[in-house]
Length: 139
Image (tube, one colour):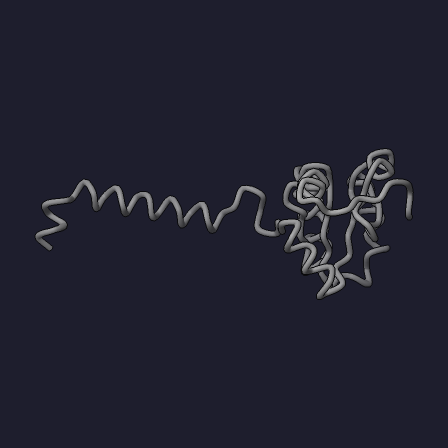
């Protein structure tokens, strides 16, 4: 107790910095459902996660993750029926940087999808991690 009284400033700084670290760890800026490229790879390989690229078709054709399905963000709610078989399985939403995917994640969650994630950093982070992209239209 004497140590705390003599070093109150140091103790206060330690408590404040610890609290800030805890808050930042719990509330990540990319959102609760964000997964890194490595985590996404694990979900794809271990749990057969469905990849949904929500970019516009011209962006998708320029380069996309293999086995991803292109459903533009504006059409996601209308075409959610196509994803019905994946309601209980992991679904990873992909955009260019991760920003559009966050909004789309909440759309699918409201429609009853239980395991919706976003690719943190999007296609840019995937490519930066040295993971492959395919060019051209798939589906």
